[in-house]
Length: 155
Image 1 (cartoon, helix red, strand yellow):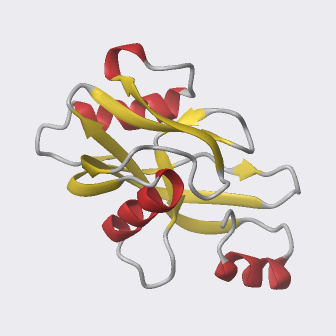
Image 2 (cartoon, rainbow, N blue to C red):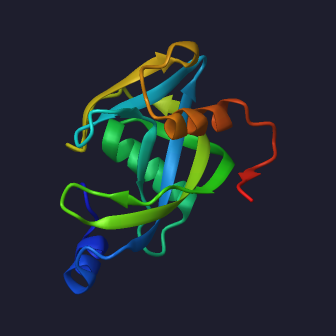
Image 3 (spheres, rainbow, N blue to C red):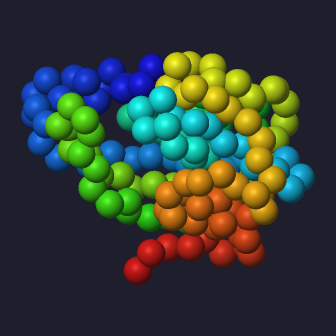
């Protein structure tokens, strides 16, 4: 599902007004490869991302989104970066801003494919040969790959 029910319910009340949401990014690594999905809305390649449901733990959300979006089972290794992303205005006029939790994850099992309709492709890419993507998405991957045991907090 592209938009969680709780967000749709909020949108019925607030319309397109800015909405503060929490998100999780799962940077799933398998050796020297990273799992990427191609978003159906923008066509861009990204690590797996998604909205955290109310009451859901961020790490659990990262794993849930990985399974839902790419049919890959992963394990969370570390929280590598906490950031607030720039405000977004979607094509329908909805405005949102996210606090994003980036997790370094290890591959457990599964063959990537676009499992839930949010993406048009899912595949492994060599970390040193990533497809074109936004600087922020590239930085999310870098934070997981280069993780040294200290979570990066924007200040």
